[in-house]
Image (tube, rainbow, N blue to C red; front, side, top):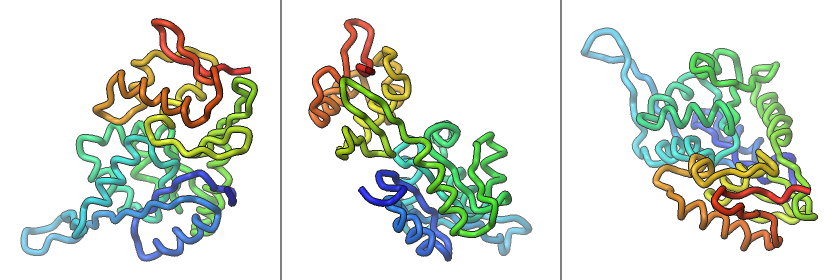
Length: 242
């Protein structure tokens, strides 16, 4: 793993400077997910007002909504207010899940205060650099995301969670979204027992108690540290924090 953003996933919405922003983030080691946005265009024959113009392929935009709602990206970078409005408009029935993620686990980063305004109206905390430049935005993200890494001593080992990579004694291990969501929840409350119901809330919609059990089994099989995740009979799971 190399670069200050190694292990982190950052979403970027398409605009004319998309490639430049993506390249700057990738240079810092981030995995970048790019998605198109809707555009507001004037109504022509039907009087004053605007309408949303959709991209030819909506699948990447829907996937972006899914990734944010399910906390499968670490940050999303915006360079225009219409891009923010586009994401919120496209969220549809998932809007509350998207906003909940942006208020907690997914960092919202905007190039300027005017870009951040739509998010702030929804009480989303926004990272805005001191200068309205892409380089300043990338530097702000590069400084903030590593601060969000979780570093613990667990079962005699050092466990670090950087984005969607778990480092055990500095050796990286990749986990699928469900196991990583469960591990992050347990690491966020070190030593505390979390019930299956509490862990289920951190998983994508449609998951059930069996999904939680399978996620715990996958964590154990991947990290291979006996006792790292402890089962507390009739209560749930916890990390064996030193």
